[in-house]
Image 1: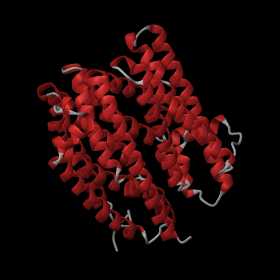
Image 2: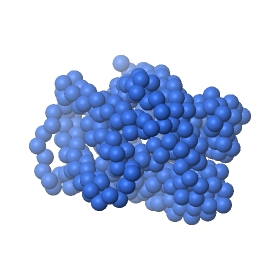
Image 3: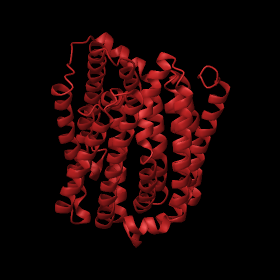
Image 4: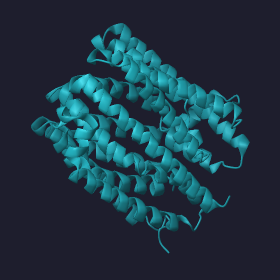
Length: 416
């Protein structure tokens, strides 16, 4: 299969499966938001926010660093096995640390009445360890990535309709969610072992420490970005309450679904651009030009559609009880365009070119801007202020990325 045909096949197959994936999400969210109510849904959001923080710690930025390393080792099975073994060993150590921390929090009573919910969601940490999507992405197995991401949503959808019947079923929902992801993780691990035939080899503590240090910049960047994404929910919960978190999260879910539409091309391009930069290929500008035209134009249209149809979308997804989410959705409707441009600049140019130091600084600068901005605007305007702070932060992210790319365009192979 030619390089161009392989790329188009990856994009098209991943695109179809991503659309199906989002349809399943849009079938799940309306049911849950109606059954659990704004307060119950807000409580789920806050618990998952804490669990996902531990998941991000275990991931340690490997979805960027290890993905890029695997892409650079294509055609060398022994090197791929070494990278896989070092990274998965590092993730195991990090995961063990997370469970020790969680155990301490549960034993100390800090989590209070959230303890049972935390236990139910904690299986997501193990599921993340068993699902090394960074390996599949680096190998450009994008169709399988989409299939594996689809599977837990199918399982969750089937089970919640049967077992989640009232606002008292928060714990049941979290067990279903984490259990479905865990089953999928076991399947992925078996598939890697017996189908891809990637074997685990013995590695030293020194090599594990080296791979953790190597990906430290990506960890700091992703951890900071993850924290920035939680600021709105944290401040809304503190200043207004969990019901407002539920409204705000529905708007974020809609925005996230719009952004996800454009992820297939971005996901396929990341290892491809990493490989092109590693080989100093002259095709860099060609891929970038086409992706900016296609993704930039499409995401702008999506943003306009979200603004115009905000009320209809909220009613369709969550019902009239969530109409308070409409103004927030209108405010963040520009986000799909800004987020897509930001990802193109960082994940198709800056990171593939090897400058992870700037990416870490970029995330830090945006976080420093976002923290006081979100705090003040959330305090004054509630969830609408959080939505505005989110948009302003994404705008700063894009502007700083554009400035860097412009001043380093020669080194980034963007000039003739």
